[in-house]
Length: 243
Image (tube, rainbow, N blue to C red; front, side, top):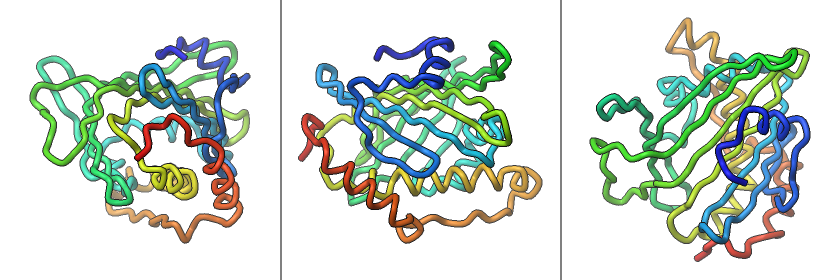
């Protein structure tokens, strides 16, 4: 899959998922994540399909773009800020990695827009890693230099949303098998719950920045999600640059 996809191609992926060559990586009641290994470019691609029945797409869209709020709800984000390099504006993130793995950081540009196509209103976000000369790499943090993503959201026709998120990254080095297992079993379900809680709390947080959000831990992941993930993680670890 060559990114970026056009808006029309993303809509088609949302309505009629093309999963040929993709393998299910993790799932919750609201989210399914598929993965494909790009052996030629040593990268990993993900497709994430979501149906969240109690969050509207406009709220999710605002949460996705609010860097200050992300520092409140995303416990894996150690640092996040708007950065500038001349006329170029972007975002800096440092992500906390589990299992004693070196943190990753990113400098990326972000574009977003809204579209009316047919009888539906779509929200679109694209990110693309780019160097910022005034934000050099840091010691003991792995700078991810090649990654990009696209997100498309629309209403589910009721009070919720449907979305597709496509992501590509060159992880720059070998990834321990234990991390893949943790990500499928706990990482994706925890992040899905964190994001869901953040969307539900966002209207109150806008009014009162002291609003507290509940934490999500491994103990909060239901047994059915764990069982499904445990099966998934045994299926495919070939060619993933493991240690």
